[in-house]
Length: 184
Image (cartoon, rainbow, N blue to C red; front, side):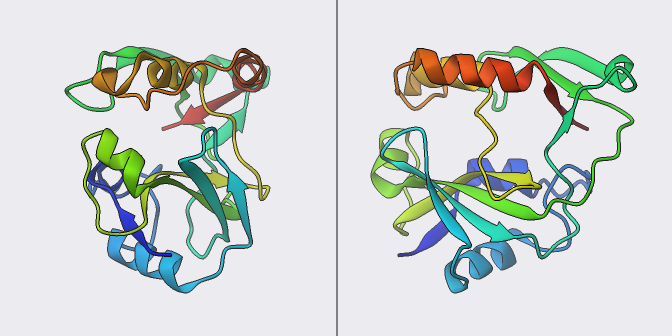
């Protein structure tokens, strides 16, 4: 099995501007090299048959992706309408500013199959392409954000994957994201 970095993930995970929410201490090439050389701690099923998550112990100083919302930090939440790419419609997003999360215990790359990426207009040579990465304390998946589930249900023409909305998974996601937020 081979893994390759997609341009979409490279822009988000290794933006080159020094942002602290990116993967730290390594290049995209070093990251992929390690993913291809190291057996993951666990392989988790993704939200669809073409998606899987590989759990790796964090070998970087990358901090956790999400922070629990508390009464002490709630005033640091910010919102804006943003698009991940110029082709996507902006959606409402929420994040913390001025919060210092702990260093993550795990890096959890999100992989899509070559066939799915081709459907979405991304050609890769490897079997699997990195489309994202979670930075977690536990060897587990962080629920996909509700807006990402909705975007996926809209189809590839709107930046999604074409997977229909799963109501139960959506409600679990809402429960998690009501209590957590990303940080910047």
